[in-house]
Image (tube, rainbow over all chains, first blue to last red):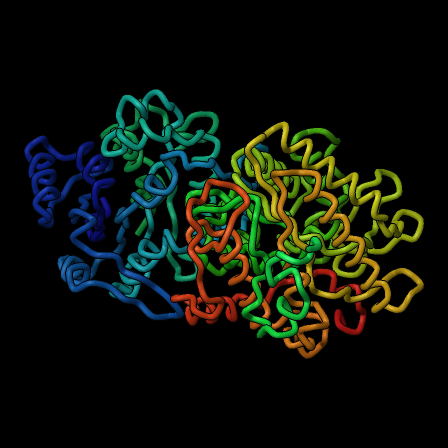
Length: 268
Length: 366
């Protein structure tokens, strides 16, 4: 079914922790993990539940540098260009799971003083330092610019392919889960604490809403986390979380299931 | 022998003024206290006070900014949003009553003000019309910003070692229903003037003295170690709402403010007067520090004010002190500051202090 399609997943740790973990045998997962540590590119394939063969390219985000997009001009590292050269000709759909750690870096750790903003009907909390939405948006535009640039570059390099940005999962709602799985943020959590979930979610929404609108301008769709992985408040359920920032293998399976319904099951 | 026989030269007009180059006059030979780089110096007042706030760092003194900008703002936005102009984002505080009500709001001595104005670009706080130039999207946002700001104001008074306050005006407009005083008349910069709701007051000596006394007493109970430096702005009134000529009104206002500061500093050992008014506005300087509008103070004037401030208060620069805390005085030449050039350049760059009061003049405001 749909065998003539050439579907690629490009990503970093988000791809490895969720999709590769959910669909590839342990040996492949281990190899990807080792490659990630050694800054090498991992290549492989997996098969979606409906039988669609999918190729993936994964690497450590730091090995690709920070591309930028400004006033119609793209700047990117040779490493990113070389990485994209590995995508075969005739790719029909490219799912981009590159980067995605931006959200975690700006949202997880509480700041002093704690700040807040009003967004989408969710008002700022009195007592926290208020920041105007336009200032938050300007800040987040800077934060997501490398991700925007990555997607625009891919669209530019593969004009015949549908490019879909797969957003990183939303924040884990459970603070106790985050504290129990702090990854590199442990000392920072100890010093400053975890930012309240409502604020993390608001930041996530503002960040990805803005990015999605920009990507749409370039004909790039955005795909958000499957609803089955989310709490009522829109956070990531802890059973779908890997550490404090990533989705796990169950999340990867759920994500591919949702993408399959949306993209792979559709007639050619 | 008579009481004038052994007085130092600065007590005589001929030796203290007439025979001196203006920049070499020792305007404040003795002070009640000294400041060091470790002292947290808070600032507030009229537009002239911005110069003091901006230049403390150049004097190797510490401007205590209790309301720091969020890290996500760019340098340009921090400036636009008035972070660091004063120790907190209260904007210009022209009158003693304004200072008093700020303290009352910050320490929950008074119900928060509901004095807002809706403009095309958003909601504005009539008590801080200049701090958020595009306004706020909602009243809730404005109230959040103000609540945090007032927390910072309270912290500023609790944690500061010294508070420099520049009195600017005796004239003000207030809300008839609440008695809350505005920094500028509604309708001049933002909002709409309502003759029934907005009333004019020209505070008397006694009223200003009571307000200053209240501020010093109240804050002193919260932070007994706080020292005050009071000044009077040498910048003339842009406009008067009295029925007098603006020059006459200006003379009356500055005289009253100057008299209040003398009274306050005479009463309190923790309170010192700094003569920025005399340095810049005395007729004996031939108006050499006035801007071309004969109202504002030129960068040269600000430069001299800051040099005198450093000489008078900085523990390492002072020529004398009535307290024993600074040790042996170290005399310096008024024109011989090692960092004079750099200081002058930075002060020149910072000289454009924002003055809301200028909006009282419709021709200026356009």
